[in-house]
Amino acid sequence: TVLTVRPKISELTFRAFGRGLHPELFEVFASRQVSRNQYVIRADITSAGHVLTWKRHGRQFSEVAASSHQPLPQGGRLLCEPIQHPNAWSIDVDEVLQYRCQFQLDPADPVTFAMIQEELLKSVPCEGLVFRFQSSGRLSFGAISYVNIQSRQNSVHVRAFHTFPDAYLVMKSESVFSVMP
Image (cartoon, rainbow, N blue to C red; front, side, top):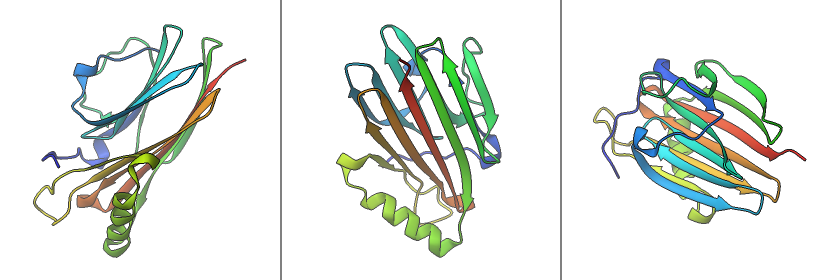
């Protein structure tokens, strides 16, 4: 466990870039990489959410769930949206990649929130990437991030769940990266 404070929900953004991002821009707590003949995808859990980096034949694409205060480059940015309301996008990138994503914030009462946290912690490591943060001090339990990668030959489906205990909110996202024929 690592002591870190998640940003406020009002500060969260969902961003997409038609390029890779330098790893030193993020504090990474857990990572997983999946390689296929058609692509490589890497998932990193960060203090605010996650970074997904998709690569194929020298081309890169990045998805970032982070604080709006996270310093990230403007170049190559395709999307920047606050994570306050449910939303969905589809982007065709250079006739190589079709990217679809959606996200939402789900409020929960304290009992339901505790059950969600427990279920995420029970996830078997081979089913996904899980990281538990220490408590920020106000509550006895800390935030949890869970990222699940379902890899196929020409596509990958990534589901991410990030909990925000101080607000009893769960951020959910689904992303699909498809190699275009």
